[in-house]
Length: 293
Image (cartoon, rainbow, N blue to C red; front, top):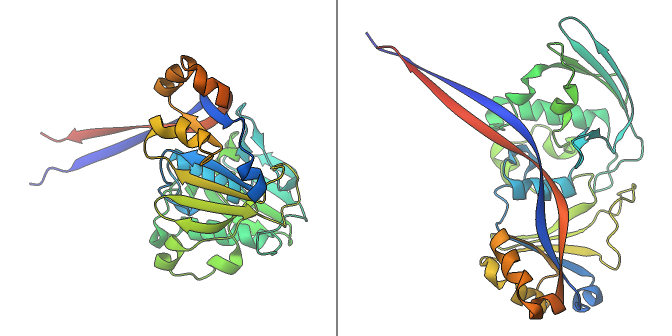
């Protein structure tokens, strides 16, 4: 007789606002001259494809290139840049959501965002062969029905007051993902409707973005810059030197480096230490094993 082992994974999603430190060079005119904003990062993103984003750095990059139906701001409130209106019906065993998309949202290649893009994105994410970590998460969405080019209905398979949580997946262009091979999809550089678009990817050290000229909502205000460059700084203690040498303009600093900064007057003359709200999710996973004795 074979004893079977039953594994049960419980995932707890915790909302977190963390005050981190950032430094900004006071005297860098070089970046403005070349119109490139240079940002230092501590690690290269594990994935640049939003269907496989799980780490913090990948999420930061994904949020600048792609839009979701809903996102959560620094206060934990659900917001949307691409939805005109919403209508919700919560029944005993189901939740029905009808959304009207804005008609002036465009991908970086000029294609307008429609309900077909949402349908094709969901179809791909829920297909087992793509191995997206969001597949199980999206199983609550029972059905998606397009009413028109810009109006769509979601049917959830149970009553759920927090339904916006399930509509935070990044939307991809149906032109690029329809009938795509999983192996090609995983490494493909995709278009998004966010403020930036990929221009150069040099693994594992640098990513360069240019502005999405079709981005209509002017919430991305990068004065005097036409490009944004993310480069990996392998040793955080070199960050101040890179700032003073105009190699980077901004970088996150870990707490131990901040304490050194506060005691170094020379550093303080060259760049500012700023605090900002950094929003993210932490997942605590417990694996509970039960064995028959």
